[in-house]
Image 1 (cartoon, rainbow, N blue to C red):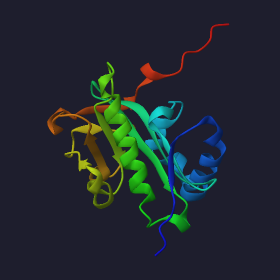
Image 2 (cartoon, helix red, strand yellow):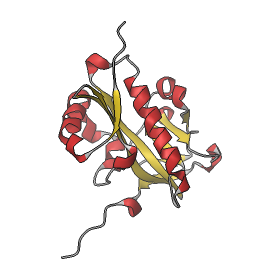
Image 3 (cartoon, one colour):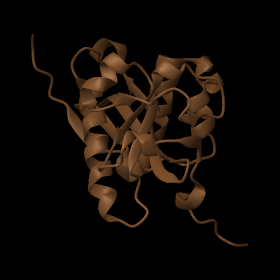
Image 4 (cartoon, rainbow, N blue to C red):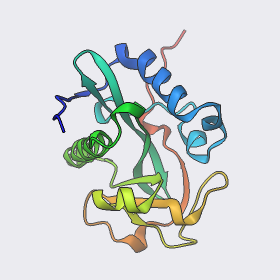
Length: 180
């Protein structure tokens, strides 16, 4: 198999249209009904912790991290993670997640930094990247979700029993609004 030359880059505003089109193609209109979408809606993602994958000038993948709070712990919500279907099974999604986790760990030096990354996804896939199932009943999300798909990755030594409480949007990192 030919090795693809993939560039992983920090997400830029100029990528927005291409990312939104990719998300629409890969997730369809049903994405708006998902619980994770409720946490991302009107809750700006962290561009500095979100990444794109390019082959040449073609965007082939994207991952975003959005500020949330789990109980009282600052955290990040991973997703959407998406890769163009013809380029799946080349490790692009794994590389995007690993790069986002590296960036989130590097940000731990800042006061109030996220200590956890949460996602709703498949444990066999994400478990290889350090994610573990949250024990049933420890967290509650703002909508229906299969508890077996609620996964978390600690960015520091935060113990799994500290991961408890409601999961909600974290507006403390929202962009400042200009006054009129």
